[in-house]
Length: 231
Image (cartoon, rainbow, N blue to C red):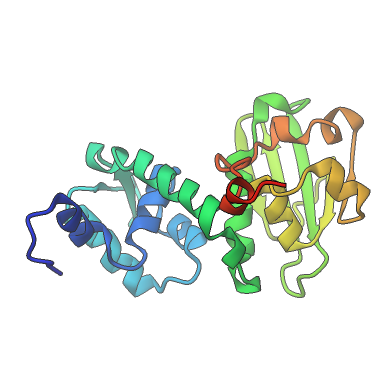
């Protein structure tokens, strides 16, 4: 695709403007390296299109593909050109928080993406002991309503099947509210007070959730209407 313009914005959009491409850059910058990790972060993309977009990013010099030692698959790593897009991705996210968060629909609350973000947000050094098991029960989901995160040392594993370990912390919540909690649209204290969240576990962990489960980097950014029309 070419816009046939010398403008650098136009040339950049020739690389980044196709559907899914910038979100793939987001996933690369967030640490995804394997094909199945990209599929977790972009659950609606087909494997065929994902392969095509990864190949295009490699051709454009935004990622490097390396064979996994002793395996058939590959890993994908961001190049310097890709890493320079981090401020761009962050600024787009900030703009989205200010101007389009009120356009969210029920279909936008992606459970698989949320759990990927939960995995990325855990701070093992802020937990107590060598192993912590966290269970999430989403009371508005009919399929795959229960997920576990097992933190052992610095290793973090997300499980859709019961790992058979004693649970330390329970989250009983609906999907939308858990997304709102992580995005900073509602506080844990308020969600508990309003009956939107049951958080069960040792007090040192339940009282300091945001220390070991860090919120989104976009949390706290007010919507534009709060600036334009302050209370």
